[in-house]
Length: 172
Image (tube, rainbow, N blue to C red; front, side, top):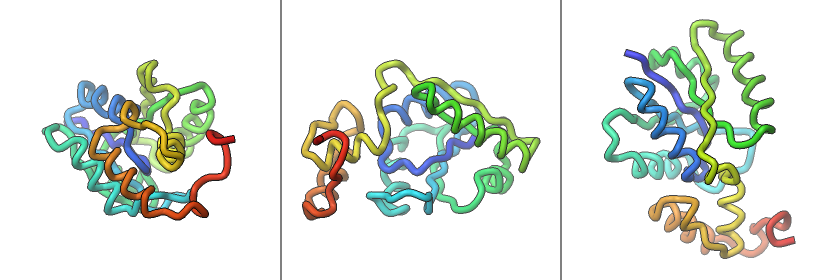
């Protein structure tokens, strides 16, 4: 049995992530989506909320399991006996980061392979940061995330004060 790990912060999960996950289950016997708890970036949702949103997204998929994790990605792979790390590529600039990460992971755990899937064309503009920012600015995100994620974003944004909303990119 080949088990693959799809790690990320998923803050929030969007259709680009879902595209990569759904295509991955065609390649592997099991896909474990691992929600990282403490990345070096600011997050909108808590680890528990992000895990819950991802679980809700894939609740009908028998080959997908969702877990939370901290620490090195290769360590969680070893703990759950995953032989492959799955990553998604949207644009060329993603390649350099993913290439370096794959090399570092291979140095740490040579028995774990990394595979990158190129997202479908309609999702290339999607990132969690873009989705969060559009939601914070009152834009329509219904074509970017599942309805339960859209609801969670709207609720979270409505609790935020204007001082916490982004002061860059899409509204400039």
